[in-house]
Length: 88
Image (cartoon, rainbow, N blue to C red; front, top):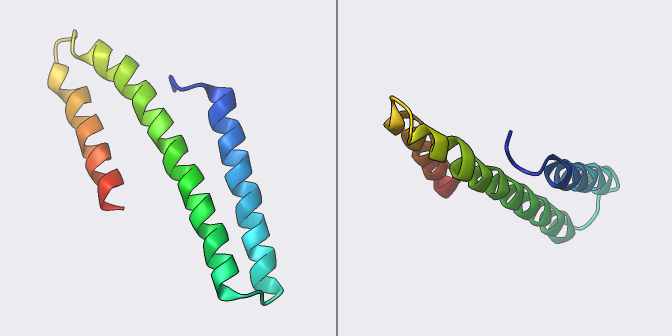
């Protein structure tokens, strides 16, 4: 992985902590809107982290792939991932 590992790991740990908090909220039968807000915050962190990973991938792996024997493979792979990100 070419993205900043410390930054990505920190973001994932934050999201994991938020999910643990959501589970606790569910167990405590908390208000649905509060649970949903926490889920949306977690999703936002995961999307941003995924975006960081994809940016690093494009800047390194795709860039290197463009100078290889099969330049379209890495580019198509990145484009397919971006399509999946948009659909979600």
